[in-house]
Length: 286
Length: 336
Image (cartoon, rainbow over all chains, first blue to last red):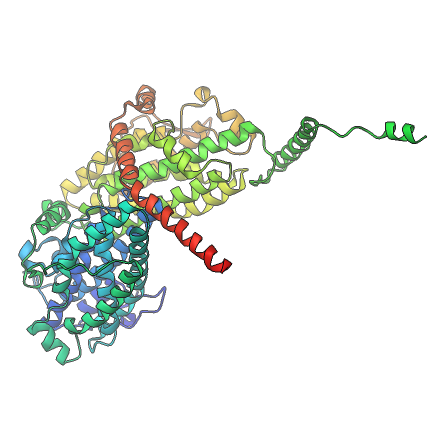
């Protein structure tokens, strides 16, 4: 693709905005995120990256071939969103040689406390019900977030969100269908689904926490205020749970802190595995 | 008169006679299809041995796709760049898709996917021996793509013309995706070969380990391949094992130069008389050992499949129970 054709608005199907397009825009100065925007993109990118890493583990281990494919697809979508957000975030950060940080610099060469993902995304896969419970919460949250982010005053964030929201809509459907099946299937599956929701629900609250950064960005119309998503999230997840004859778990929220780099014990292991090869060969290309 | 007339009406043929007649007509139709080199479809008559051969071959092929996901899935979480991670995930996902088409094609011959999966897990069904070798380094993702998928393509392109319709059609789609996989594998090796000395060494080591096993993917030498002749007569197999192996060596010997690597075989040469590529001796004892279940990863691969299957049993039961409840509810609503 020629540099002149690079544009954050290339989001039609088959001509979607790719991380490579964003990298080109960053290199040519066409897209230049502020530090605030970069930090915000890093948050969303880290969420998606950590989830992709978790979901990728299911491939070849799922209950049915169809689920190897479905979970693999969701992982791939999340990885695609992560690559776009991280590439954009890197546009405001420099390496020692003055070049912009790439998606790989950010994914492979940051330490645990430098990751900005919230703690829900790093929670272990558990059994299939736990993975579905996590995915159910994530998909409804991300759908509401990306839907609003398509109207961001930042054209790159808006373009990434416009692609992502279409994909996350399918993730929502997939997880809701499984919540219904597991809740309404056998006694065992229902017990597992109830347990899984109780395990994951403490991490819901952190998704909707506001802080100075998002308020500053929201003021300028660039970011979405997390707390503003809570109403729709509760209403829409509530509809599915009601149909499944499940209750919203009554559990206290986890302390959270992922946006400030405070993580659960799990993230260290995820990074150890994800980063090991890249760190064995610093400076290598693949 | 009336009695005489009745006597002249031929007796109704017995069920057995009707079957014999249908078999004769079926065999004639089948022979014509083979002679015309056109296609048998699921509801057509076919000889029992043809059905059995295809069932074995297609289900083994499906199992190979499913077991073959494992050595590559082994590197998804450690892929050294996000782009490579995405490509690898998509590739392993493709393999699950290939397994699905192939199980579906096999189901048209009368076995259910559950039956085939049970046979695999019970160790009663075979899959390609190549997947019983370990994927030890990232370069193995390149070598598997380039050599293993490359050999698979050589084997599978002729299968697109296989006489059994559902198999041939599944292979068309599979071959398209496999050719991407092979190019991706080549690209991984090329990048490593042009990288640091450690990366280049990693690439050469992977090629050294996967070369001979990939050549053995074509099956035993022709004079030791008892089923080949019948499969060729049935227009399932089009070229002999040795013929395909020789073609593959000829392709690789050129491509490895572009990679800047070498094949671990000093005896590769083009025979001007036979117009065929020749290679050094292969360790067929090792092949037989791996085939017999004594390869480096046989137990591990089967155990992993069994574990996924067993761990997922409650999910499949839940889905089936839910579907049954839904359909009962619909029936009730329709009746009301």
